[in-house]
Length: 346
Image 1 (tube, rainbow, N blue to C red):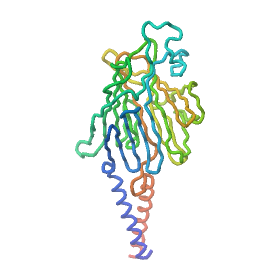
Image 2 (image 1 turned 90 degrees about the vertical axis):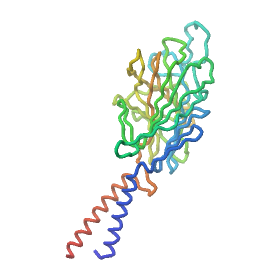
Image 3 (image 1 turned 180 degrees about the horizontal axis):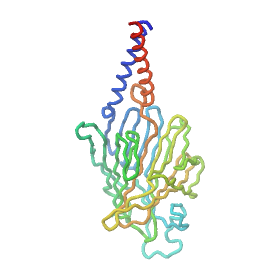
């Protein structure tokens, strides 16, 4: 090996170590800002957006390369589980089909567009001793609800983005790649004592350049191109842990909308968990409607969905985690080879 080759190889090794140092500075590459109730988290090439300002709350994931999907918190609906399958179907929204109402009847669906939210400001967590950034949190809290009979209902959306992996009551989060939001509800104006509550989230792919596919928590494909509204299909929980998820992506990139198969209920000043079930339908235009069903509650219920990606972030240098490991291995081999060459010459 000549001196020119040795210099190039050592230069490559030094450059790799420099890149690794830059990638390690995670907290310097994690940015957040708020503008008119829209919060944006940016981490290398990934962006998480939460918005609750005048429209339905929206949770968005996008990359600089153009991969993008939205999860819209559409509405809450009280329904009577006529077929007792534990999930929402559209034909179960008629609460008084078989019984006479005891009093005035009002709409049993609350569109989230009728809720006005206030932004709390940011709460930032640092590692004690190292001052390393570990998480950012904020709240959207209902201030007014412009819907008759829902004036006492309260809803808070608590958003978290952790930079390190977390396990929160069995719900496992991917650090830096997942935005979690807790939905806390109080004082729902029930019209019956034997009904459930369905929480509707719409999953919407945004960039038609991607050949999106959607799979449920068991890996089964969801038909996004046929209108199945009114024929909501029950999605069985996979039975392995707390976290369920819809994966969305193509052959190059994959994201997800995840949800817990349990919710935390406040009952007589103590908390207990109860099962949450999911049903799904499609509008036929690529939008998928998911309905998460909660048992009747009298006090408070807390629920944890999230949006994220399975892919590692890519830094401004264009290197992802896997590429860094690969180049580091090549550089170590190169340094070893240089060392052996010099030793042989001596």
